[in-house]
Structure formats: C-alpha cells, structure tokens
Image 1 (spheres, each protein chain N blue to C red):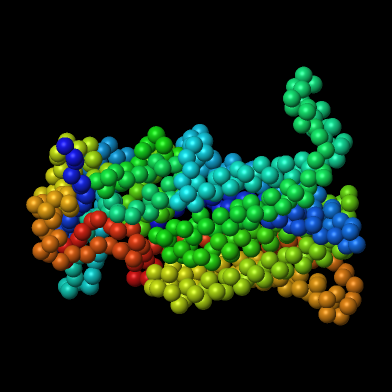
Image 2 (image 1 turned 120 degrees about the vertical axis):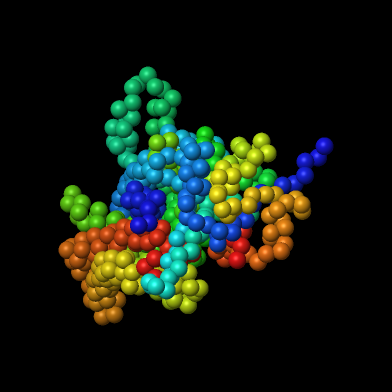
Amino acid sequence: MAMKKKRYALVIDSRKCINCKACAVACKAENDVPVGNFRNRINEERKGEYPKLSIDFEPEQCHHCAEPSCVRVCPTGASWQRKDGIVLVNDGECIGCRYCMLACPYDARYFHEEDGVVGKCTLCSHRVDKGEIPACVATCPSKVRVFGDLEDATSRIHELLATRRYRVKEPQTGNGPQLYYLL
Amino acid sequence: MHEFNWGLLIVVYLFLGGLSAGLFFAAGLANYLTVDDKPVYARIARMGALLAPWPVAVGSGLLILDLGNWYRFYKLFTHFRWESPMSIGSYLLSIFTAITFVYLFSWLTAEERAWLFGKVPASWKQVHRLNVDISSWREKIAMVGFPFSIGVGIYTGVLLGAVSARPFWNTNLVAQMFLFSALSSGAAALLLAMVLNRKSPIEKHETKFLVTLDVVFISLELFIILPYLIHGQLSSLAVKQALSLILGGPYTFVFWGPFMVLGLLVPLAIEVYELAPSIFKGREFHGSRNLALTAAGLVLMGGFLLRYIFVYAGQVSSFRQMGMLN
C-alpha cells in the first residue's frame, strides 16, 4: 500500500497561553534536554505601563521549515529533514560546528555542551511515529498547540487553517516556517 | 544577553586563513613581475612562499579545535554538500594549504632541502625520492594557486554572507570586503617580515612594490565598506537595524576608531604619503622603515578587527526586533 504523503505542522493559539511553561517542562522530561537548554520556550512581550498594560505570551520552538536554512548550511548532512517535514539532527554525524545555529532565524537550536552536538525540537518524532502527539501538545492545559498533518483534509489543523486567520513568523527569511500562529 | 556561538577562535581562524591567502597572492604576483626579464621581486616571492602555509595551517587547527567534537572533523571530507559554504570551504582550504606547502617546497634551496631530508631516516627510501628540485615549477604552482587563494579569501566572507538569518552578514559585499582585507593583510605581513629581516635588509624597490600593492588593496576594501554602509542604510528595516550595531550600537567605537581610522585610514595615509613624492614629483622613493612598520602593523590589526566586528556583531543581528532598539 502506498503511503500517503504527510506534512506535520503545529498551529498555535497563543491567546490561550497562560505562561505556565508546562510545555517546556514536558519537553525536557520527554527528551532528556540538558540543564540550561530548552527545545521550546514562551516569549513574553510587555506593552504599556501600569495600570494600562498587557503581556502577550507566545510559545515558540523549531518551525520545521519547508526550506530549512539549517539543513542547507550543514557541512556533513547531520541536519536533515524527513519527508513528513520534521527537521532532525543526526547526532552521529554532527561535528558541532554550530553553523546551523547561526543559520536559524528563530534561535531554535542549542549546543549540547557535554555531547558536543547541536540539539533541537524533534516534534517528538519518536512519539509521532507511534501515532501519538508531541509531549508539549499533550501536556498543555489550555490547549494552545494543535498538532497534525497538513495533507490530511480531515485533520483539526487543516480545519483551523482553512477557517481562521493566522500568521507565520519572519516569512521574509524564505525558510517557509510551519508554526502557524492564529490571530 | 545574546549567546555567541562563534567566538574568538573563529575570528582568529578567519584572519589567519585570509592572511595566508594574501601572502600567497602577493608572493605569486611578485614572482611574475620582472624588469628587463629579471625577477626583481624574487626575495619577496620567496619570503611570501616561506610564510604562506603557516597561518592557514594554524588557523585550520583552531577551526577543528572549535568543533564540539573535534575528532569528527574528518566527516567534513566524507561528505560533499555544495549548498553548504562550510563544506565547499573545507575542501577549498585543504587544497589551498597543500598548494602553499608545495609552493614553499619549490622555493627551498638545495641546502635547505638537504637539511630537511636529513631529518628523515635514511631507510625511508620512498620519502627521499621526493627530494627533487621543483624550482622550475614555481610559476605553474603560483598559477594553479591563485584561484585557490582568491577562493579562500572570498570563502571566509561567503561563510558569513550566506547566512540569510543574519542581516548584518547577508549581503554580497561581505565576501569582497573579506577578500580585499585578506589581500591587504598579506601584503602588510610581507612588508613587516621583510623590514624586520635584518639579515638581508629590504631594498627600496621592494618596499615600494609592497606599499603600492597595499594601497591598492586598502583602497578597494574602503570602497566596498562605504557601499556596504550606504547600501545597508537604504535597505530593508532588518538590515538597517543590523547596521545600527556599528552606527550607534555597541560596536560603533571599535568599528570607527580602531578599525576604520587606525586600521584602514591611517595606514592608507602613511602609504600614500610615502608613495606620493615619487609618483607626483619624480623624487626618489625613500621608504622609511618606521613608517612601513607602523602601516603594516596597523593594517594587520585592522584585518583582525574587521573579522572580530563581523563575527560578533553579525551574531547579534537577526530578523526579530532587536532589543537595543526597543
């Protein structure tokens, strides 16, 4: 049976985010991320002054871009992209030159000091391959993130992107980011 | 605070790689220039040939040490990825380094070769068969090496320029800026070495040649930096914001003071002052030793600072709204 083409992505409804950081903790626990490094984060933007003020929370991680510049610049091919769009680092091939970290417009990668290799969000590919959803998506108490396959017309993210307005971050870099932020 | 992924080792490497490219280029050029069919700059060519391999060899070593897993550096050569400037660069660098060593060998005298091979055990016959005079190949080696030296000089800039996520780097001018900075560093290093060599003092026509070469390269560099600044100001907001790092931001002083004035304009002024009387008034070129030393030293400092500023400021620049402008 021919496999149907897949394209995994995340839709993020950042207005639901309460900055509890459960996603960051779940990710660290799931993926054994070293102390001091994070594969996802919550950006805070403060506006105004008391009493007229607001804070926006915006979760961010690897955008698993359509044209990932980190993969392009990697001299050994350690940074690579699966057919379903997930961008990964092959630890065994990574020489630790950190060129990919400079090439990433979203600062989504970190350097694993102990192993001397670069680490990043894998979209929990080990869970996704078993039919589960990424840890950050599963743990979120306010359901900020929606994970799914863009090629699947019956999926929730397909519906959200068809019916809601959204933006992607820094599209001008030409990376084709695949984190969709609902407006 | 922003974390710097590439630090001083990379700066030093970019400088040393460029320096070797410049030394080889100047040495090769000196070898070609003749007056009445006599190679009048042969001593410059020899000095350049003897110096050229070492900076790039040391620099490549630093580059490997900077890796997270240095012992995996061989993986650079088990893959070829034409889209990655670093992959292309590592091949270019290896070939260039090999050529500089062959070129050095072609300039060794019979006694120097005898001394060198005297270190090798006599039973290693295959190695001793390499003890041949290849001085007649010098020009051919230089010809083959020119594109590679230019390639290495340019590639250090392309390495940064190809990163679309860093607006401070992402312009086609960085490659040329680094190239001409590399070539002028090479000419300056040669001038420094020749002037400091007390055993066989530099002659006036040699000083004049190296100073002229340096004036040409510095001028070219200057006329790339100015368009870089102008173009950046007229470019998109991200580039404009990135340029503000050197136009009011944290790198302003080091860019304009130590780099632009001391590393570029002052040596250019000194060299023009030295050359002008012999060019415009037909007087003899006097070639002050101290001025030559000062100019050459400042050019080398400028070459290093250019790379320092670009490596560090470039990493701070990004398409996100930059903190310092808030």
